[in-house]
Length: 60
Image (cartoon, rainbow, N blue to C red; front, top):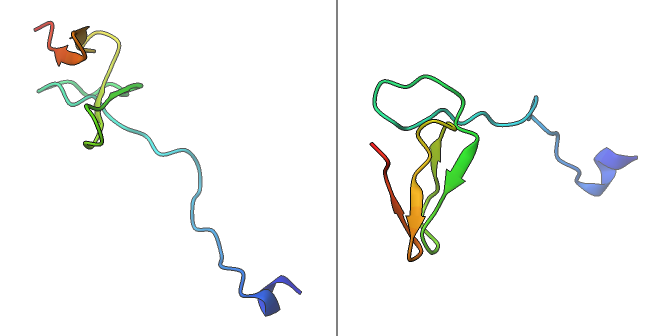
């Protein structure tokens, strides 16, 4: 049986939802951006940053 092999239960119920990080926006942040190995920042379509030279530049 799988419990004899040390299998661990899964507690995930679905995909993780990220919300837009732009101040005041409550839309789904479907665009994740990270520089190097840093933590990604999540933005919706309207607030996604523009990339110039590998560095995100906020359009607002």
